[in-house]
Amino acid sequence: MRLFTSVLASVAMLFAASTASALVTFTTTQSDYSVAPGEQITIDIRVANPGGGNVFGVGAAAFGWDNGVVNYVSGNSVAGNVLASQCFGAPVNVCIGGMNNSASGARAEGAVTPVSGRNVQILNAVDVSAHTGEASDQAPGLDGVIGGGDAQFRLVFQAVAPGVTTIEIGTNPTDAILGNAVIGDGGSVSSAANAFVSITVVPEPGTALLMGLGLAGLAVAGRRE
Image 1 (cartoon, one colour):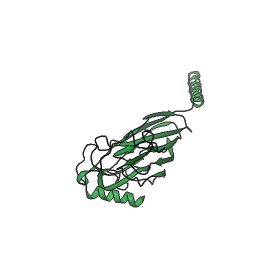
Image 2 (tube, rainbow, N blue to C red):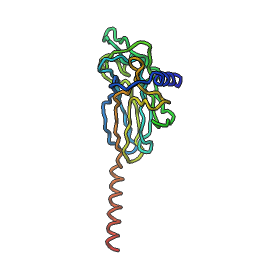
Image 3 (cartoon, rainbow, N blue to C red):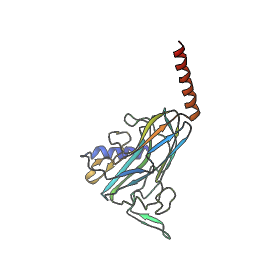
Image 4 (cartoon, rainbow, N blue to C red):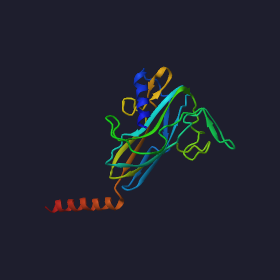
């Protein structure tokens, strides 16, 4: 995976050009979570090319969260036919014209990088031919069903301590180590329309009650003094 990441990063730096409007978009089924410490958060993600523009490569990751608020647990990514041009349901049940994702299968948290910090690579695809497929609502996800509309990428985090943090999902062309960007016509390098997931970890009701009683006790003691 490191080799493929470095290849995409090299392509991005070699053909650096003016940033165009987003060719690729990342969406999640839910953008806000409110959980208690110890609870898990499952984030389902899909990628699309709604304008049908020419895409030669995409590198994407989840990054930016505060590890003191949530910890990464596990993840998974689809393999081939990302941005597939056409899909056929039963009895054929196949998509054609898509890009192959080398960052497929089980996902692990990556090393800390200067820009993105902690990250999980979910997509790394590059081709010499352009891919114009949109197919976001019909290409198979992790369940392999055509038209299922399920997650193409799934990440699981666990709440650690009270606080608020945001997970950004998509590209970050300024981070040359990851090389996460969209490669378009003429080798142009641009950003995707990233998804943002906000997670608020709140104290458990019992903990909050104890804190409230403690503060009330301090107030009473203060009045007595």
